Length: 106
Image (cartoon, rainbow, N blue to C red):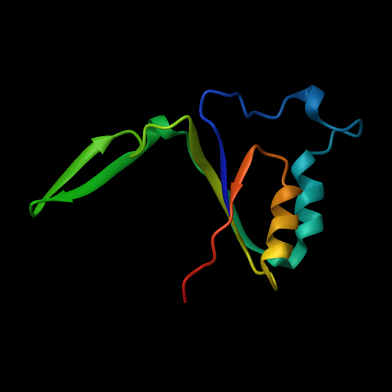
């Protein structure tokens, strides 16, 4: 599951977004997902990206993301689920703007 958001939005968790008990809102999602979430991590912002391309046998390195789009990948979660419906339910409960679900090849 790729977690995406508008790179211009402030996605920082603010005090007013926290439940009354001060818990991180993602904690409930992590507990709900349980062992189905094998791994996951947040990525640094697109401004810190480095793009590496091979062009005509030469390596070209540029600063910034490959795609100039409004939404950028901000993190990922590797899920082990029984079917697409289960993946959709987990993604829908995540809480951020967009989740892109893709099966792993193999």
